[in-house]
Length: 173
Length: 172
Picture: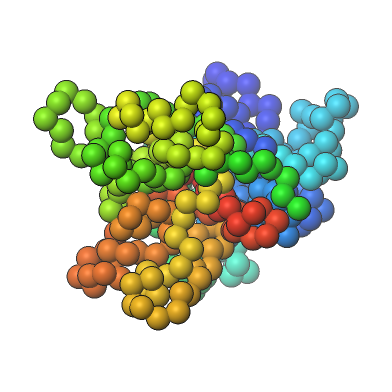
């Protein structure tokens, strides 16, 4: 039986560091999910600017840009309109459905999708699109930066029916 | 145009852990800039003592010993006289002028100084004199060694619009 109300993309059980940052035009235009990994990016202005992580990290985003829980409230599209968001870093315990569900090879190979099997204590990095994953997509994609040793989290609770397929994560950024 | 008042060596945007430590004789005699990296040092007294980092880390010092913002106030040279400073560790978001501006090779080689090019996302260590840098000065000064002690990453590269301060997300 489900013991937690998981009504957001990223549910917080223990809070770490959090601060506001500016999101780049790509993020503002395309939107993002809560729990999305981001990385620092250069700006011509005096601002702290982030964009989608491609395996590097600065933290993860607490709130998605268009979550159903924000609809019909003052938060509706507030973040993309003002091009800001809140980043989480340091030590957190979160539950999120923003993680890679299928292997990189099956997602990019055109064949049937092969689920990634997560287990408690697996170490996590960000994927090439900034989702939590146990796969090293730098190595799998032939990225010259491989291997990706920027581990930023552990699995506490693997996704399953009893967690509504959310993964519980101990973040360490 | 700079959006922040950068009137100190180390400007804090988000605060992590901080506590008081004793300062080594070297620190007290020479002074230091805010944001200076420090490492633990043995002491015959029952105290937590730090000295200039040589690539190892305990944290970084929040305030410099002789910052212009402290002139003409009661804080003037307070840390040096009392022998205590405030060390910072954990996760901080800072912007600081205390980082290596020029490559280790050019600083020690006697030739023209070559600027270090910082970019967002690059990981930082402390240099042999305890300043933030992207270079591995252990390896550059002795190819048989390497410094694995990353203590931060670049959030904002130095440029005219931020008064050439380096933005750092610390992780100590």
